[in-house]
Amino acid sequence: MKIGKYTIEKPIIQGGMGVGISWDKLAGNVSLEGGLGVISSVGTGYYENKKFSHKNVNEKPYSEENFYCKDALEAIFKNARKICKDAPLACNVLYASNGYGQIVVDACEAGADMIITGAGLPTNMPEFTKDFPDVALIPIVSSARALKLICKKWKRYNKLPDAVIVEGPLSGGHQGFTYEQCYEDEFQLENIVPPVIEEAKKWGDIPIIAAGGIWDKNDIDKFLQMGCAGVQMATRFIGTNECDANDNFKDVVLNSKKEDIKLFKSPVGLPARGVKTKLQTSIEENTAPKVACISNCVAPCKSGIEAKAVGYCIADRLSAAYMGDRDTGLFFTGSNGYRLTKLISVKELMNRLTLGENYK
Image (cartoon, rainbow, N blue to C red):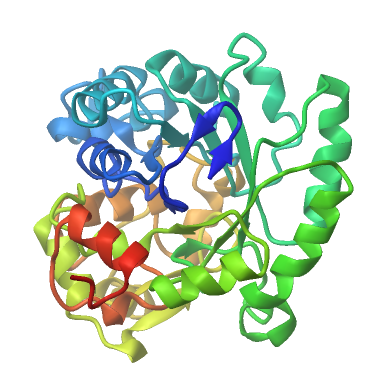
C-alpha cells in the first residue's frame, strides 16, 4: 500500500486510540510487523504516570497544554522508533482538539511520517504541514460529500489527500453519524465506500482505506476487492500483548458480551461506542464523579458545558480507563469488541490478518 512517499508492506493501518491505548509499544510493533502503526496524540499528559505534564490539579494534567503534552508526544515517538526503526509511523490528531494546528506541527517535529485526522472535517489540514512536505496527510470521512468538500478546500494549498480513510458506524469511540444513522443500511461501511471511491477518482489516484467493524482476513479481502487500498483496524489491536492499555482495560473488553457494547452520548456532540460499565449506571443514577473541566481538551465540549449535560468529562473518564479504574473509566471499543477472548502478540495478529486465522 503506497501512501505519499511511503510504502506500507501490509495493507493494514492500526487505528489511533486515545489516552494511552495506542502509544509507543502498540504503534511501534505494528509498524515493525509491516503495518502502519498509529500513535494517538490524545491525552499524552498521562504518559508514563504523568511524568511530562508540567502542571497538575488533584494529580490531573491541567489545561489543554498538559492533557495533551508535547514533551510526552516526543518521548512516545522516540520510544516507538526504537521498536520500528525507519518503518513508516503515523500520528492521529483529532480535529476537535483544542490547539489542533500546533499538535500537528508537534507531531511532524516528533517524527510522524503521516498525520491522520478525524472528529471533524479538516479543511485546513495542509496549512499546518507546509514546512513538512514529506508528511502524508490522511483525513477520515464518512461520505463522498465530505471528501469532495475537503478536496475543494485543499485546492488553495495545492494539495490533495495522500489517502482517505472511510469510517463506517461500527467503529469504537466517536462516530461521524447521528445515533439513528448508525443503524441505517445506507450508512453502513460497505455502502458508503463505493461512492467515496468514485469521488476520489475525480481528483486523481487517492488510496481509499476502509474502517469500522473490520475483523479478519475475509473482511480485509472484501474491501480490497471493492477497490480499497487497505483497511484501518483498531479494536482487534486492543487484544494484543503490546497494546499500551492497562490490563484492566483489556480485561473489561475481553470479558464484554455483545449486549454490553453500546452507543453513548458524548460531550463531543457525537454518539460514541464502548462497553457499558458501572460508569453509565452511575450517570443514570446521578452518582457519577463530579464534572469539572480542567483539561479543556476538545472544542465542542465548550469548556465542560456539554460534559455536564451528558454527565461525564470525557478526558477524566478516558484517563480513568487508561489507569485501570473499572468503576469510573470509559472503555471505548468497536462493535466487535466482544469477539476478543484472549491476548495475542501483534506479530501473531498481523499473520492472522494477512494469512488467515488458521495460518501455518
